[in-house]
Length: 355
Image 1 (cartoon, rainbow, N blue to C red):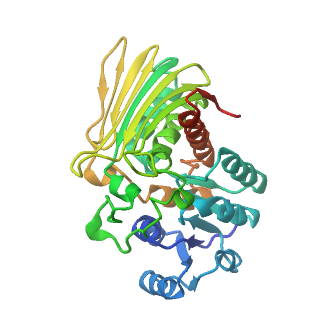
Image 2: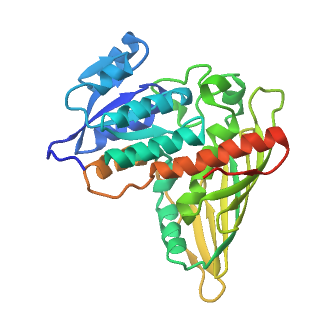
């Protein structure tokens, strides 16, 4: 918790596409936060972002940002290949950290960050906006209270039209393109050395974290198949995951869909009932084996994917106002699944998750 009663001073490392679209506007919108500094590899770009968003400092060196006097928290919104080193440097300095997904390249790196945050007594969040939808939080509470009984099976279908990003055909964002301040740089999504991989790192990082978010369970074993469609990155992914309690999970995901069609169906089957969520459509209901079906009102369009939720929660958690709603341990669980899935796809055998 921040000891001072003043606003939380936040820095942004990687002030590019997503930071300027989601994280920086969230900082500016929070009454208890201030944008202290922004970092970009280009000084001209850093200066422009700082001017346009009223940051006090503009730098090119991430370590220079981390050493600024008064800095309390930092957003790591660079490309995935930089997440571990930059988040580690921030945590070592005792800063609260929000790190973009995928959290790291490996599960060991993610675990190191979680252990370091615990040792330093600071907040570590993984940037997964779906952890902050009203439906997701409501269903999560029902599952955690045991209203669905023991979880036995989960089915996930997740699509988002990003295949052109993954193939490097263009860099046009799939979110609100009319409101994009900066487009992604070429390579940020399609170069495996920078992004880690394709659909598995970019999108299943969401779905894999969501499993532990909803249920509190951790993965035990993964069997996976990837299809590449002539790309260096995986475009179609199918995973079978066994959770620690024996629950069976199927995840099907691709970025090769029309711009007009997105799916994020999550079906949770327990011994006392089932939960049905369609996150892209803002629909959720719980159907018990005995008793009445409960359906929540559909979410408004702006509630479907609360892009600012992770940053707003970082401020609240750092100030002790709210609990951490997207703990770094969820990112670690996701990296365990991602790492095992990549190995399974290469070796054609199920892979045990290393705990």
